[in-house]
Image 1 (cartoon, rainbow over the protein chains, first blue to last red):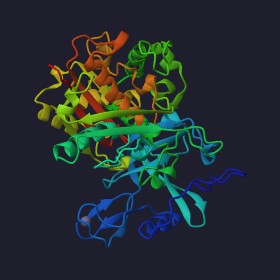
Image 2 (image 1 turned 30 degrees about the vertical axis):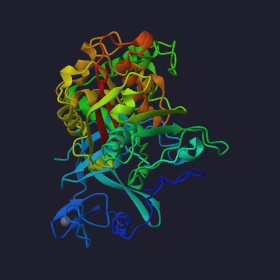
Image 3 (image 1 turned 180 degrees about the horizontal axis):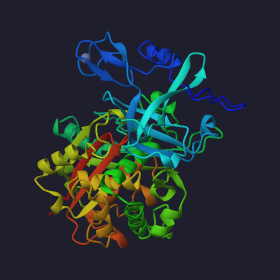
Image 4 (image 1 turned 180 degrees about the vertical axis):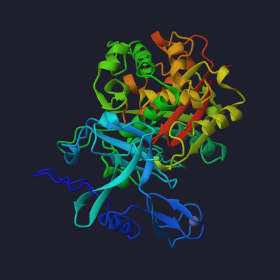
Length: 146
Length: 323
Ligand SMILES: [Zn+2]
């Protein structure tokens, strides 16, 4: 865990509205596990969670653990954000990460100088606690990652 | 509401929202309704008005579906989304900040010949763009649209009605539309837009190609949008958009006139009416009413509308209709 980013007077990160199909994702994150929605009928992974499989419309989906390792598909340093929750975070890295399992997700690359994050960099998951029921999967640079 | 205010009793009413592709999307829908015999003329209206609530000073944007999964990470929606596309394009193809800045500079030159543009009389240089603040790397402030308030309206009419008008008619010669995704994570390659499909259909239905086009109106929410549009609409190969804009003069006096009104970058983006400015500018150019920025011998225009983050594309081929 990369711990809580709670700062006096600063609102926490906004978290997604609760939904039956998203809940297992957040519950796993609180446990320090990254899981991705999986369709048992066509054996496909999809992110973000949805009520059904976008490939075959099967609506009884499960979640599988993934390695938490991936590659930066693209990244940007966000230097301004009017949302008070991000006032003390700027500049921060917003990235699209391709997990080794073939799923792309949006996330932050944290615990490094923003300029150190480049397209193609290897990363691995970490978790930032938001509240009792939410931890947010983020990523750190993983230069040893293969 | 518009019909009531104008005292019109329409036989066809519709609401279109394809983001920045709304105006171009309205035109072929209106033409299809006319072709179906539902009506003879369609008034299309797009507007962005100030929010009446106290303290709300800028246009409000609806959240894209699935935005909740991105807000957690401080996604800014378009600003960060287009920055991610620009960063990937730079990584894959070596596109430089200077090349993207050239788009903003050429369009500002166009705006300086258009008294109605927001930045009329205020030319800029590549240095000005590159020294403006970084908002989302690699995008600088002057690579991003200027939101404003305003409205645009145009009439799509049956041929005989148009020919009876006092204006030089402009014909919808071809169109294509393609929507590919909502969330950016669902876009397989963020440097390849559905303009590939929408422009191909527009060319096919019009029976023309990129080489036949006299003036371009390409939706420009960011500099990178114009570069991706030029590539995907077939003006240069994928990845060559950076050198292409550096080597071509995109001003009204240049070899490839593009966004001759200044584009949204310099004319201003009045919400959905922003994308309508690309339509009205193409119509003015085709009619020969471009004033100081008129492109000579202008017979054929390509207009592209782009909505969401490179998601919704609608491309038109417009032709001067009195030839
Ligand atoms: Zn499935």
